Length: 359
Image (cartoon, rainbow, N blue to C red; front, side, top):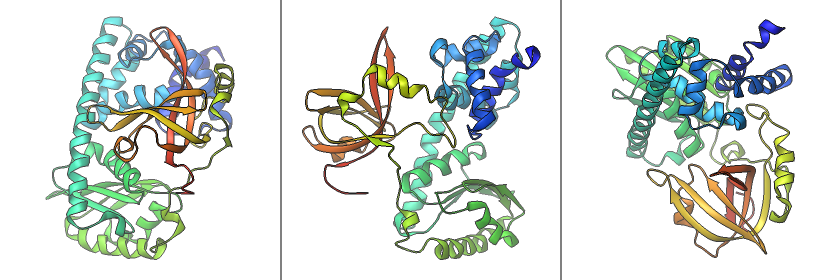
């Protein structure tokens, strides 16, 4: 057991970063692994945690998913995974800091490249008409970076809420990634079109595949035909669904109650954090944030109670709503620590005008 415990930090890191379901033994291993990771003796991991701006004693599964994991994965996407391996196995603090700084740089490059290529892929889709009128999205370009086609597909699938395939296509062939929505098994869709593919593999929500360039158009036609049969216009599967655990007034969200919710951690794949909802909230303040205004920060009030909120990748809220609007909001609460002080913050999952009904 003592030997096994030495690797619990890596177990937690790999389990969360590889989007493994956090259920049963996996959840128990990650829970204990997070405790080990917070005080890890590995110089490279300590440096990476610092470079990512994570406070060690507060490190959670979300920090692995959105801060540490992306930095480790960025090296393999744009350069070489050897950089990440070197960081994880580093025994010298100076080497650890050097590699962590380099991974930080590569991740920033990855973020900037992703924004540019998502914009290019979106332009390709919109040049062919309204993406919302299709059962499946299909993007093939010769200028996409093969290392991030899966990230591009994820972003587009989230934006349009449609199964999405993104490919780099050039004279050497076509390699791509697919991301799906609930109810459409994307790997089975590829199975139905396998005569056009060289290889493929994946699961219900994601897959990778390759094919010869001359098979691209036949593959597209076959896939669109399959998707149209599975996702006809008006299908309930094409509507976003968000399950709310409980409706509460803002006054119920005290530091004590939010910390109690945190006892459900670690949350992640197959074990999502609790989603709460409050209706009839008044927007007291809102503004876009982020390099390109892709996020939105709000202050929401419920009578005498009010809380700050952040809506990631929902910058359009700042255009669609105004101060004074009354809204219904679904969110996940958390304790936000900043400059030595703590406060309850809401991460917005969905927003609608009060009384608008289900969306």
